[in-house]
Length: 170
Image 1 (cartoon, rainbow, N blue to C red):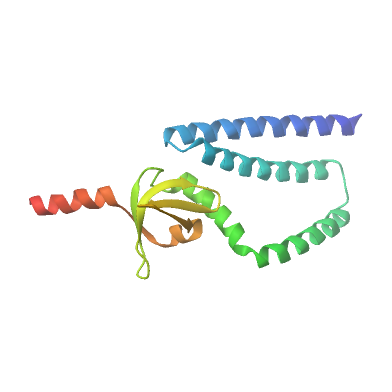
Image 2 (cartoon, helix red, strand yellow; image 1 turned 90 degrees about the vertical axis):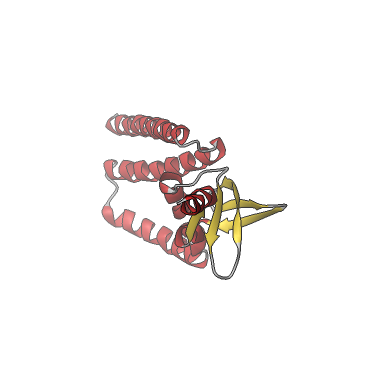
């Protein structure tokens, strides 16, 4: 009976945490005019993280021995480590996606220019997805990885135009 109550409490705590985090993400997204598509991705990523956290918490409360957990987790992490090492950019793009969601100063519809000496990447942000930013340049749609957009300087072109007009007016 005790185990059943612990499982029930962890499930209830997980449900409340997911609802609260989804509510906070929705408020944040609406205050910054983030697309519902993007908000859904972030909410799913946070929900999966909460699920892993509460699963670990449940295993701990159920009294599974540390040696059993460590063998199981080390096996899982070994397989995940090999898979993620081969595809490390996927993990870094997902992490960059979270950073962009909460801290990127530009939104969908903004005209930007990515400062890159090799390429001219300028246009309007069409969408910010889990792995990349879609930039529309004329008839072309440029797919730019999230990790690179965090590493390069990005200029909002309307800000650039306003500052250059201000300099000309002085």
